[in-house]
Image 1: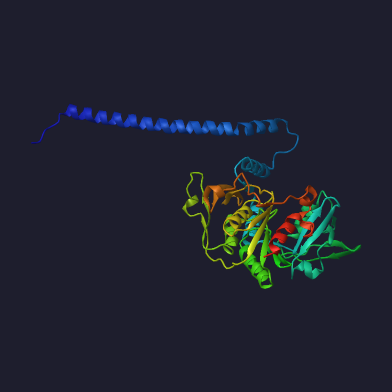
Image 2: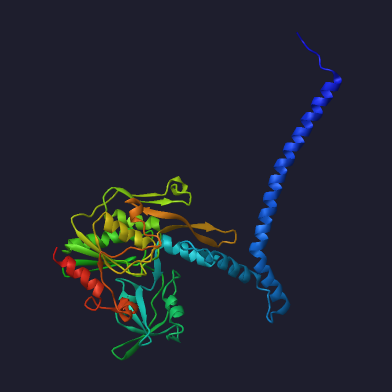
Length: 402
């Protein structure tokens, strides 16, 4: 049976419905408002010091403050540098282009490795790559570079001048150098792709120096190790001392050349789960076996180089020779900005195969065979001979018996 509702009752129900809806809306609105006010308050506190400094500069600074682009870049750099976990960097548009080109294509230049020896105020050629413009121009190992583009090399400018030997532009750079008391000037071209590895045979032991983990490093690494074995190497020592460049992704590709099929490492986000659900690095194409290994490490072995050393120790059973590593066991990701720049941000913790016991972040890897170098030898590592380099000598002596 149908029941009729009086007009008064109908109006009352409508009013109650409106009142309830209004009350709920007010509660939700109050929560949102409180959140906004809280964020504004927090944001205000975060920028309070910057705003105060800005007022002081506007009122008292003697110079001009018209270069806002440079000031904004400095603020952005300071903001990122203030982060205290892992490696974080702000990159301008030009720096981002250079960084990305290096990561994807490796280092380019005239084809030399150099080292500045502070004790003698000399920029020394430590390696000349085969078929490079530097080799064709006549430069040799142990040459002393005295001037670059007509500017004399000394302790206050060598790092700036040294960078002129690198770059992808197809232009020449003027290099003045001394050898056996004779001075010569050459103009090798830039643009040569510098290998990420340097390899040679020391008796029956191969030596491979890895300068960085770039996109092309794995193929160069594989070729170098296979060539050493073909030439008679019964063991190989890998040198990742002073190596921190490149990415975890490309380090995993290098590791893939050595270790058998399986998981290499997992990147874990701050919530403990796999970063973005797919940051698991695996080995699938191992092609080198039956060879004993050692890895040289020191306090400047960091990031992707530490992952390499860790997996070589735990999976390939390599001996770690040298001193404790840096302890940078995190993964970084590039985020591009609207102005063409980028932020390189730490996004995950690297968990190598073996679980928590293998994690080296903030701890570093400890050598299985500790060998210390003197302060002077550490500073001059790049120009030591194998006999002078106690860490390399220990690794070579250990592996020579295999």
